Length: 475
Image 1 (cartoon, rainbow, N blue to C red):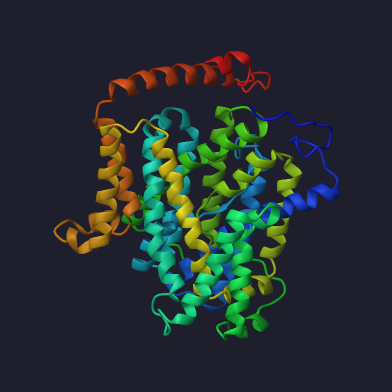
Image 2 (cartoon, rainbow, N blue to C red):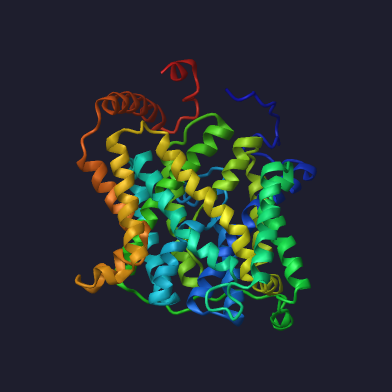
């Protein structure tokens, strides 16, 4: 059990109240440091995939910062009491969508990404509304398989970036690999041996060291920074929005998967920081808020949003749940998003630095999937679900869309470009088709009984219903 934390009015361990600045500022900056790399890197990767440069590249990074801030505010302070979870979480642009985004962007361009994102946001809203009956299709075995596949599919992207970026004149040069490995080494050392802010910000510190080394090696071009203004407000519809059925289907599947991941992050937040499970209303509002922000993001050139697991991890460690701490973090990101000079500096980061930092992130995503998979009894049935799903998803995309040449074009577009989509559908289908093992039936019956009891007690959102009481722990 967690050690009880002494609470007082305005305490950082209470959701409400205003903590003193001496605690508010460093704790808020802690969340900024943990999130910043995840906020900007997906936009940089998509820009490289779609050939976006100059002012438009800067604008996409600006929008990423602004949308992350607004998505966080929405989760902290729900609109109409239904759009947003009301929980202390950071939500913003997510790595989890990158494999599908690069597949769509490489084939159709940014406009189609934004159109598919708009549709995906609508799907997330529907998922949030009907979250209770839909959750049964995504047990940890299925969700873990999908997250595992996401991690695997991101490895080639990271390695290409470490080598300097596909298409680069110096792709594979020793200079690129030197910077990439120095960046990775700093991240590795701080992540495993560092403490406090050094450990939490290991990605940021690694990128700073790698960036400084790249400057000394003449790999950074500062020419675009001087032309960037000091202040700029993003306008809607700067980028065209286009719709493609296959892209929309792929993105809809990704939004469903990430909605399930959001359930896990919100649950980890409440269990780690509040000693309770999230209510149905909180889960529904969190996913609906995620969908709403994705729709808004598509209009401004932003990318899909999701909850940040690294920030959830901070909450489970320090148990700081005061909303003002998270609001301050959102405010810092919001101010940075309105300063093109800052975004312009971020566009100068060499791809080898990004690759050296993010390969550890992608490894963590993969291991998160493995951890979810192995949390279940690893029977022959479960091995079949995981093994076949990953084999088909990764196998088809590794061979290339040519192996589906005999199928209609839409089949190739949906299943031949992203391993995550095919693995998700196969995992869901196999989990429904294969009968549960005898041991698994007993476990499912026990879990279902406890879950139904807890959800029944939480369904009226009464804060006096405490799922950590003695009766609950005994069950």
